[in-house]
Image (cartoon, rainbow, N blue to C red; front, side, top):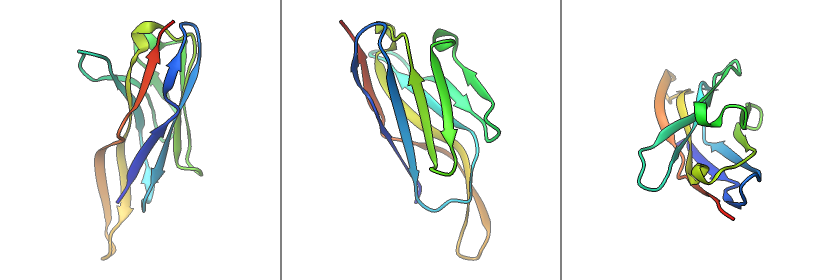
Length: 126
């Protein structure tokens, strides 16, 4: 069973930085697009950034130029470098695997979509 564990959340002052990590564990063959989402107080969950297998990145407008999404497929990890933090960045941040494949016992190559981590809290406050 594939699991995602986020780390690196915490409290930062406005203008500060934090780096989130997402470690993927379990048996899999290939990781495709991976994403970061966030859910602020009283708000719906929203896409923050995504990165494809070929490392093409996409960012939500509020974080463009401030956040950098990267991946290390050897370490099976996803990262989000967050700079110039603002109070409105306060949220629970979730890592998500949009799609991955794995070999089952037959063996047949299976595809799984929409696998989420448990989230990590980021608070930006002076």
